[in-house]
Image 1 (cartoon, rainbow, N blue to C red):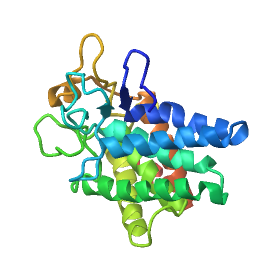
Image 2 (image 1 turned 45 degrees about the vertical axis):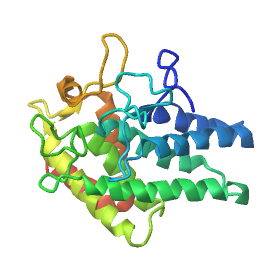
Image 3 (image 1 turned 135 degrees about the vertical axis):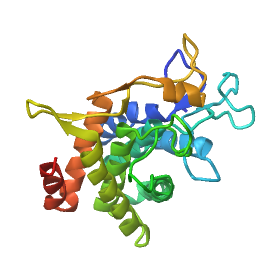
Length: 265
């Protein structure tokens, strides 16, 4: 698999799949070869298979193939926690790569594999959506834990992923209406609770985790305290971008959904 960065050897991070995946897919469609596609698509399948939690279907932030990092589980190599935005990046990468995947029979195996992953992730994401707010937490599977908080960028990413999966007809007939319901509720909640308008009339998006990672200097241990201790900011592009994309997908579902919701601010 692709190392996350040269300074992080033997490590695959979910966020890295969005850093290179859609760009590589567009390159492969325009200029690449079958080998490029196999290279790219195998990354998505490989990291999902190693980071998936068998109990919840959620994906851990990262996987250390060498099992040498202090944050790595000695049996699985996975990081300790399921960080919302990391999984959000992966979900976005998955549906964006599918945009470019050729339709020929030689790519049918990969299409089936990626769509199967999309269905699995849709179920997993819905399973940890907060019932009260319809948003998602910084640490996805520990919603009731003290200091955990509802985080806007991950919530926007999941809304985008769910809406787009419905729009592109990637989900099963059973899963699609459930995903649409979850995405619609999440989108409305983002607008109602995380978007605000200041005295000048400008809109802002709140409750965005500024940044999170693993290892490095000073060393980031992937603990719960680490993830919830990173700064929470307003209007970070890692939240604004996914929110805009989610709004566009909402328009694809029905033109009144996003416009009516935004007018309610």
